[in-house]
Length: 274
Image (cartoon, rainbow, N blue to C red; front, side, top):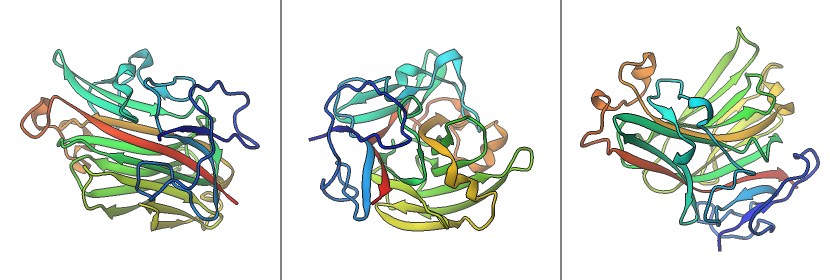
């Protein structure tokens, strides 16, 4: 059974209006399975398994207000309607409608942010060339950096990148890592553990990359409240960022880029150490 769970501990956001059932996560199968896993040594304080039939906007904020457009080389504009719940999944849609690209983004900003801990989520990508994504942690106070990119890349690539932005504008800094997954169109679970000494990136429950927190400006992340966000968009071959991404050929749907597709998110969870 898919469930939505909130266990709001000290420092979580005040009173929260919840729909659906309220329960504790734990003991729910394989790490890359369809339910939030119980992880030895960790307590789950936030989880959503998307077991309702609509996007609960008291929990998730979808992008699209004010005619928002993607940055970083993305095309089109965000639509709030492109973030939906279906078949026990949160679905982020890109589409080519009436000659215009649209895309999707969503965040936990209305309901949940956390200092440190462990984030995990299970996703799968559409079979589409030139669709970019970024799954990230963003500061609750909106003062950037820091930023933790848990997984970033193109839906058609097996290479997944991780980034850590830190420091102070205009002298912000960045470190990056990358991994290779077997099949981006199958389910994969990605995450990050924010430890006292390092960021530890996970894939299907295993630590796969590490960025040491070995300077004072990096260790600021240890005291920052961060919410999780998911973003996706068709990538523009004429953008300055095109050299780093697969892009949509000629900027229109074609045999490799269908006119619509979805990133599916099966569940999202945050944990604190016991």
